[in-house]
Image (cartoon, rainbow, N blue to C red; front, side, top):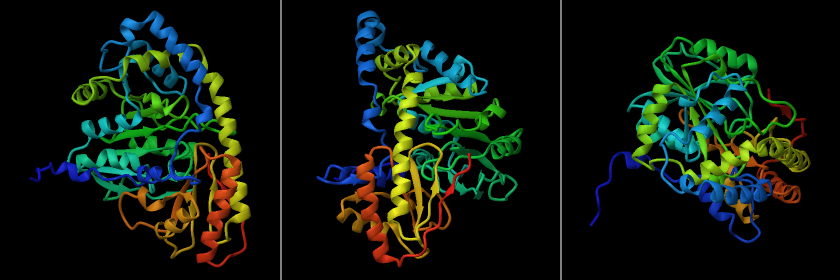
Length: 403
């Protein structure tokens, strides 16, 4: 007997990234595919000590049900963290989530109706597309230039938008950072319109030379939702994120999540709060930034040595990713099996486009998990794959992504 599933279930599709991650278990495979944090960045000793302390002193609360919004001291810590970035944030405007991916799902539940127009960067984060798609939006791509996505809200295709989803800092998948001027243009264009800004910021702390500009939300109070996560700076296994936004929207999100998981783990929240109050994040971040900068530099150097001149990329100023463009006519999806035969995995760029014509000659590489030696080996193998299918051209110096 075949059971009848809902129409919405058709929107739940396999993530090509999650499928590629299964291949990393093969012996000898070097994965440049998933955006996984480097395991050596996990503060194991500090988390172990904090867990013992929480269970010794707060066991009753840590092992019990808690409020759907999250525990108040952690919400206040997040609010203070956002205020330091220029965002007007109060405790009752913060919702603690089970990772920021849950925050994206709750945004979809509360803000999107079937047919709602959602504006997205081109390309954009695959996980956001997956989170929003079941609620039936119509995605519309934003044009962009070197400064980032353009606020073309008077375009007929954009005029009736319900919300715009942006990643201004070290965007997944391209690594691009939106300029300060472009952020101001977005705030000015959105101000007074019935369009919600959803500003996703999982990588903002992972800068290499200088912090990114202030969030768009800092110039757009009462109209913005900001998503953040502790996955990239502490550990993804903690599954802890947050959403900040207008209090009435946050209240609706809290009600919506009650039907799914009631709350985020009380133990995890108290554990993270303990290490945050102890100053772990300030001590941790310089180490993570230095680690990822070295791995980025290793990948950039390897790309310059091994890629044919027909392959192009830019230099990200933070985050975890480098975006490659193969020559016109190349197909990164068709070339992936050849790379996998050489024991290297990457993500074809087609996965990151929401609408319109999808270019097939792009791919995303992550430098966060592989060692410099593994990066050198993997890029050399990819260079051989790409050179075998496209004649070499003179190599030009890569450009630097705007900050």
